[in-house]
Image (tube, rainbow, N blue to C red; front, side, top):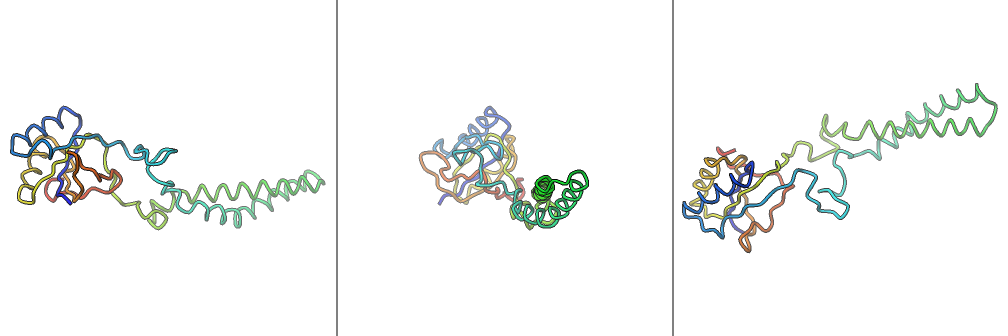
Length: 191
């Protein structure tokens, strides 16, 4: 594993200027990597798109649908059945109205739970408070521990934001195991 220091820049010109400054300070070209990080949700890890197998805000929508169908759906079904029984003597229409009421209850329950609990209570979405990596051009530099602070200073002084460090695999002149979904480990004093 290699010690890697990285920072986010607003554009490729600023990133290239930082890379030139790193090279002028003794960091070899093969230890400097410039790449773009897409916005969250646009990393295309799955054939159908997206970053995750499912939306973390959906959390317990299935439970909300069951509770909505069981609790609110029963109330909607009774109400729908009662209203239809007053309007018609047809048993199939009364049952259809009760079914529509149960469906509306389950839909309302699922929608109420989706995203609602993750932001307020934190128990539906364990990642609710995890920092999301911002999109932008990244400059990563492989360094030795003795030169880590120099690399951080150069990246910050050349306009880099969110200076971070990581232990990762560096192969073929780039950070091979970079994970855009992993929360960055900020470098103390350089964030």
